[in-house]
Amino acid sequence: MNLGDWSRNGILHNYSGGVKYQKTITLTAEEAAAIKALDLGKVIATAELSINGKKVGVRVAPPWQLDVSGLLVAGENTIEVTVYNTLSNHYQTIHNLYRGEPTSGLLGPVRLMK
Image (tube, rainbow, N blue to C red; front, top):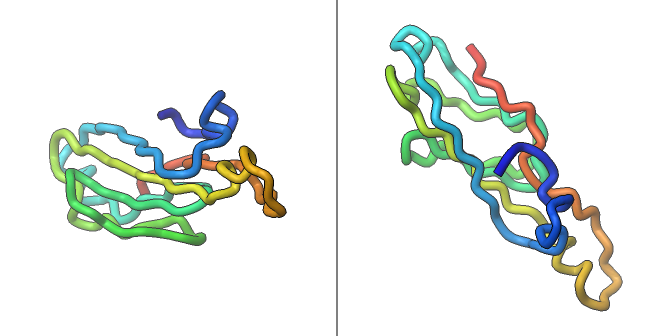
């Protein structure tokens, strides 16, 4: 999944659940040692971060930054962010009084920080 609002992607407009974003990056030893945090930018609504298969943490509100000190290595690194939205999208399909905002996803920008 690319960064952005998944509720604008056809059937995902009514999807309530999780979507995994994954990126593999290659770093030198010096670059890996210098990176201290990952800033997810903007997230709607909950984000769970894993690096190289190790769970780093969960964020349910801003700031959308997580400490990644010592987790990145020289060579390839796989960064996975699973975003869970709210039930608002599902509620678009049934009769109810709740009409929350359907915007969902990892909106970014995602940045590695020193």
